[in-house]
Length: 177
Image (cartoon, rainbow, N blue to C red):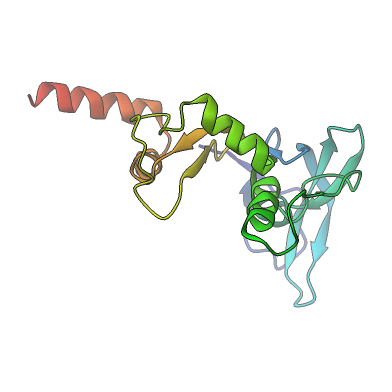
């Protein structure tokens, strides 16, 4: 679970005293280093925390947590996604969405799926069990763990990605046999 940090003298009218600590999280090519001392003020007047991030290329950038989490900002501006697929095609959009959200190209995603035998990394089914295969990732670090069917992805989410809860669930099932 992510920790919260004390607000660094946020201006009057701020929404809360504590904010979610993003330090150490990875978004695309960016790793969050520290909270910026400046805040972003939206046109509507709301204040948002900014984060200083280091890019894989060595550059730095300061942006809001919302921009990082949505994938709108994933590097310092050093690279732009270049897709080999025709603009507007399903593959182009999938390539762009995967890269913005997880830092993976469609080719890398397909390679990852092939490396796990084109089955769910947990239960081993070859069925999607939902609309599409799910790219499983740690919600704290952003690191991709594997490709899952819909049921396994939902199960991990419902158990809060917490290994201790998984252990208790396993003990419960074994004891009830």
